[in-house]
Amino acid sequence: MLIEWVICGTPVVSTNCPHGPSEILTGYLAPYLVPRRNPTALAKMIDEVISRPPSLEQVDIFAKLDTTLIAEQYLALAE
Image (cartoon, rainbow, N blue to C red; front, side):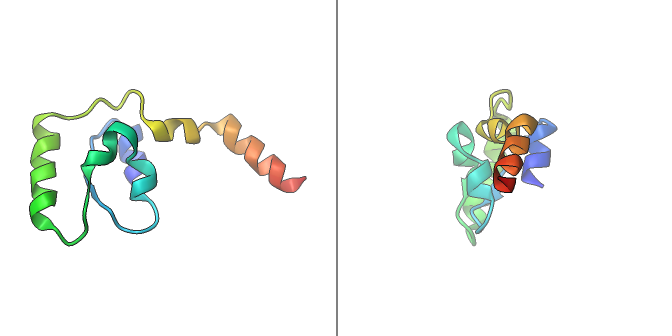
């Protein structure tokens, strides 16, 4: 769901659970990834994102979601 929210322009905060969030929240969005099992850090970052939401114009993950790039990667697998 993180990717969908970012694509829709919704600032997100996530815990650093395995398999995903650290691949999505990179670059200037990395601070919005907080340690697991740390409700204080999570609450603090939620307050931060509400008071100063980051720009979601140039998010690193968007380049990896380019449909042409993905299609080329699938075609390369078939070779």
